[in-house]
Image (cartoon, rainbow, N blue to C red; front, side, top):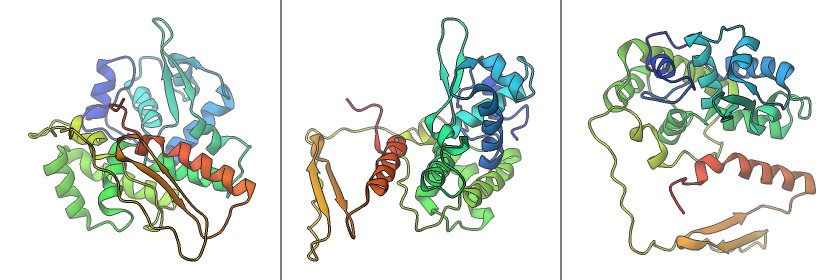
Length: 266
């Protein structure tokens, strides 16, 4: 759990709504976040409720900065969304959260498992570390060096984050074989953390066209769709899917929106 004087806690105390500030990381691991999501689901189901009501469901007072750190963690994992409602903020569980905790998808269901993996990498710093090392993490000393020197972490909080990140990967059962794409570099903590260097975006006058994949020689299913800006959407399969498998693929694509979509692009 993030300490009261940690960057996450102070960022939330400054604003009523829990917001991600530097360094941007969840206050606790995914297992605890899902446990709290289950608690909220038992009270809220799919309804939106006031921020103070959600805090009370988790056993916190409306003025509790620790409670807001907990809600910020749920937001970081993509399990809770804030809905502006005049002067009073409202919150509701996301579709990812519902897929994880509702009885619609029991333990072991592919959609539930995919949603858990998506939630594990939803925090932008998690996605960045996954893109850098995947599940084959270097020694803790190297992770600590990277976070402190290159991501502006505080020495007192870095060890807690490393333990939380490793526990989250284990809970989600993520491995190098998982092909979940990392977050786009422009969407990582580098934009929001207090470091000495800020990335500079450059937009080429004419975006290069992505190289096309060659159709498989064995005649297995393959589709290719050209997209604006030089992008190409290509799908290669070993064999055709069942209707149920195709529905799962569509769900996985929806869950990958944060990794595939640049919100600054028009």
